[in-house]
Length: 90
Image (cartoon, rainbow, N blue to C red; front, top):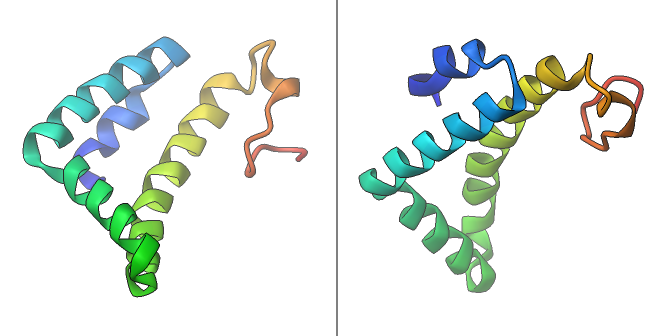
């Protein structure tokens, strides 16, 4: 996540966030990290002790993306229709 911190901080629009997501997905896929996460999620179905690690990995991404969404969308027409858990006023 630290690798992408400056890139997340530079996002100023939803389209930029989507573009960043595509780049991250390609990079993380090439590194094998998406496959590892998929295996952890699948394994957690039959081995519950894997669930906390999988949840921690997903939560890290979710929280970072929520920060960017809040910053980018707070002044948009979508601001009042968001259902993000951390969204102001929710």
